[in-house]
Image (cartoon, rainbow, N blue to C red):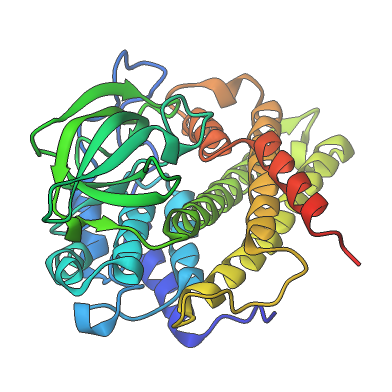
Length: 388
């Protein structure tokens, strides 16, 4: 494993810094003061800037207008987005587009990928299942109907991010035979209804209900392992967002404690303050190391033309993803809690951005499973693959 980033990956990170540096983390009303969602739509201005900088097409093949980069580049970009709490579906839309590229037919690729790369077609994913605790693929049932290869979907997925703004939603579903597939569902299709929900961070989510929704066979990805691969990508991307958020919070805290004085001395000079900040710095470095391990394993698997795991490891890639999410969930929680503590009452002020970072951190901590869920999954993997 080599943690040195390529020139292309570094260029993607620099482009992301240029785009997201203009995005204020408090650009919408505070979730603490808003009875409903903080906004009805994604940040279209920022979405357009990301598209103009080719950040939405980074992972797409050049024949679809992309740069052909890997998930490591995506995580570098997401890290920058997390620093400013960027209100764009960069992770979800990119992951859905890459799933279509990897597992979809040429007809679907040609219809979806160029528009997604230009930001004209917004995609999202429904990864949380019916309750947020059960397997997402069990929340919707799919059955084939007729001789034309069409599929009919019934069920519901909860807490779908950016559903009201997306043009299509990639929905995991199961068949009676135990297979898992991914269906790319147009939001305005007959039988699709959205019920509004609000996230911890104040963003607008939706419960998507599917009632006999009929899709052409070309809009359904039936390859084995497609949903598992997509879930790994989404989880790893969530870790990248958490890392960027945590680094921004520690920077804000360092600046505050360096200027705020007690007894005539900056808070940062007190040993108790310095030790707590150092502990959180260690958390961030552990989050970073485990993120790049998971992203590297995922990149090796994603770039393999045969779709087979290409990166060596004592455990399957799910183990590295679980470790990364454990550190991301626990680490980002500790970072924002320490930041609140070191800021005192000032950290809870709604005209100061720290409380917004805290809300986003809690959302990222629980998204795609809290640390406890991934610890259980890691335990199962260790039991099934004893380390020699």
